[in-house]
Amino acid sequence: MEIVGVVCEYNPLHMGHERMLRQLREQGAGAVVCAMSGNFVQRGEGAVVGKLARAEMALRCGADLVLEIPTPWAAATAEVFARGGVEVLRRTGVVTALAFGAECPDVESLGLVAGALDTEDYRAALHRCETGNRTFAARRQAAVAELVGPERAALLGQPNNILAVEYLRCLRGTPIRPVAIPRTGAGHDETEEKDGAISASRLRELLRRGETERALAYMPPAAADVLRRELARGMAPASMDRCERAVLDRLRRMEEEDWKRYDGGGEGLYHRLYQSSRDAADLPELLERAKTKRYPMARLRRMVLSAWLELPAPPEHVPYLRLLGANDTGRRLLRRMKDVTILTKPADVARLGAAAEELFRRECRWSDLYALTRPCLTPCGEEWRMTPILFSDEKRGNDHEETADIARPAGIADGDRRL
Image (cartoon, rainbow, N blue to C red; front, top):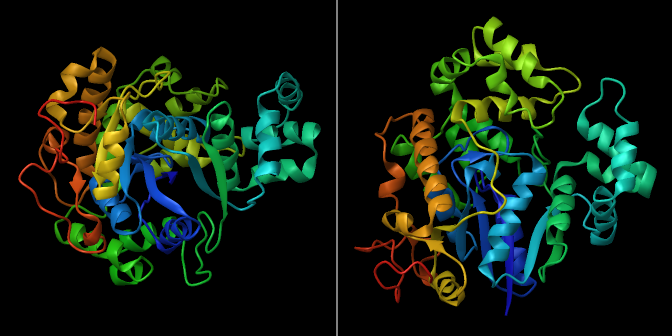
């Protein structure tokens, strides 16, 4: 049976996401495993709705198992995000293929670009391109053009292709085969409807502007029902605007050297952000003051988020797999994972080793801060009370199954960390 992995955010899950999941089934996938971002995402902000609700959307719309990409990988660059997502899927030991959307579904061409990025020739070419006020992305594309030609290098100018190339780099040396799905519908950050769909960024904009029903109409009904419930509970839409002063409080207490640890490019950007944090009265002004042609807004947002959360550099490996949700098929897959630590009950985290416990305790603090972004404030400790979403295959698209001990799939003994 082909078991297909997907690295995703589903922020929120829209028609294009559901279409891809359905297409994977039509192409023969026997099961779909999602490695999904937690409460913070690659854009450098909180997800519009929490991770359990988004995991439930995925399960209702075609996924069988949802595992979490921890925050240090989820809120990072495309390279680090891809590395974290692929590692989560690889460590399951059951995923046989990785499916991803791409503007160019030609795996061979994407693979040539991926191969070029890991050569000494590329590094030398990138060094030669370090002139002018160009972004790193533009300099990287120019360097790759020297090696594989401008036509293939141009693939790095489109967001889904960029992630696809990073996935291919991470898959090298693994038994997981890549499956590229043509990206259709509205593109990344596009504001207009295309083929009856809009982008996730446009959906988030509509939700935050209060155009709720208009936004929900562009989501699969099963996913829209989950989001409608979270809206009614005051759990969505989450927005960093609600905790602006909390973020500014942290930034204004930072010295210039404190910013340096979050400047992964080593280009001195931290000087600009430090000065902007002193001169700006709010976050939009801070970001605008720091922005130049060389530094895209997404990078600035990630640095600000990292500083607020005090994110460490991602460890070399993801120390555990966190279960967010599963149906019957997903639970059968969990029982096949013999040589990997699956965290289903927060109370078990102390048994996983120092690295795992440290990461999980940090994740708990980050979730406490994420709670500040919601319309309805909630107390600390949400991660310790959180239990995975579990329901039977036949309940897909309906209300999820309520159980007395939803955190423990059938057949798992108390305290057993390997499913």
